[in-house]
Image (cartoon, rainbow, N blue to C red):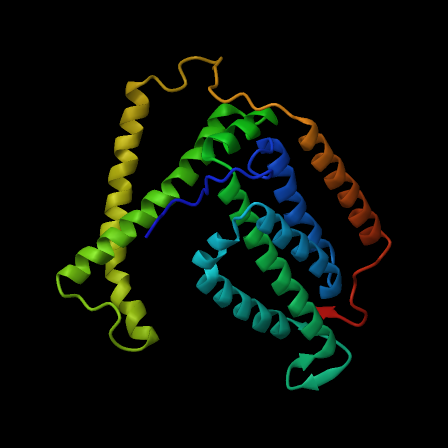
Length: 260
């Protein structure tokens, strides 16, 4: 299984400055949380899907489909449990809580899709350089870069351990769902040991290269805002201002909703 998330495509989204793509991701994270009514969240979800379509990165969402299904179902059920309304439909489900749970589920899935599209269209080095250009200290940016770089490594280690155990006759798919989960639990030990070993090697490599000895640094990447970036940033700011104004005006709420 390919553990690399970034997709090397020559699209207009890929060519955007990393700061512009960070702004788009923040927009997709902030605006869906403004509204309770799912009808007000759907437009942002549509924009995210169009974003993924233009960047040709929607295929990466298939790798998250099981996680998205589990999170979507659990979110839908839990929000119905922890909210009430004035119009009871059946049992513990109210019309207002049902609409709210649909909106929150769409919001969560939209955020996951936006994050996956961002990682699919932005190299790790571009992301870190963009954060540093926005004023983030280099050490913090390097820590974020390292964390993101370790994710594919850990995923690859998991699959390597799984294949090794299968070659030794360990049937991980035997039994029901609970039994399958139990079959995978022992795999956490070699994965954890491998991650700790890689972390130790990585720390020694940093020490041998005198990481942090110089305050000033040079960068291989030198991203610059172009006309397309200014246009996208301008549209993003306008949409964010409009969404914020509508939220302050009280639009997007569900009348009669009672949250615990």
